Structure formats: structure tokens, C-alpha cells
Length: 57
Image 1 (cartoon, rainbow, N blue to C red):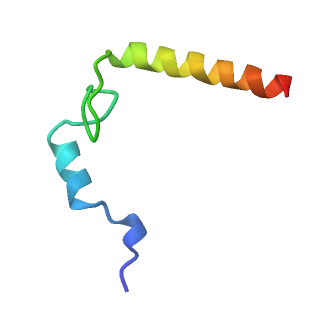
Image 2 (image 1 turned 120 degrees about the horizontal axis):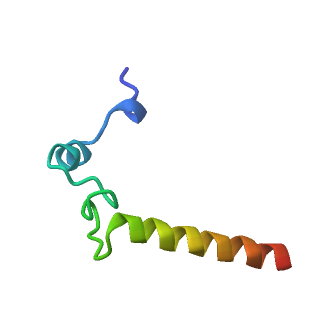
């Protein structure tokens, strides 16, 4: 019996082989208009805001 949890899907394999690595390259399953550095900065700011909001509850 094969454990499918450890087998990569064909689509994922094709994306990686094609260099479509997500935020890192700006494309993958989605396309990002901002460079990855700006996306990571925005995500960090969003996370910080969420933590602050949760702490106020």
C-alpha cells in the first residue's frame, strides 16, 4: 500500500520544475504583483497587527 501523503502531485512537480515557486519567484498557483521582499514585509506587518488585536481581546 502506497502512502499518498508523501507523494508529490504531478501539478506540484511541474510547477517546481518550471521554476514557479510561489512568492519567491512571483508566480506559482497564484501570481503576485509585488516583489517577494515586499510581500514578506506586508505579511509580517499583517501578522503583527493581528497579534496586537488578539492581545487587546
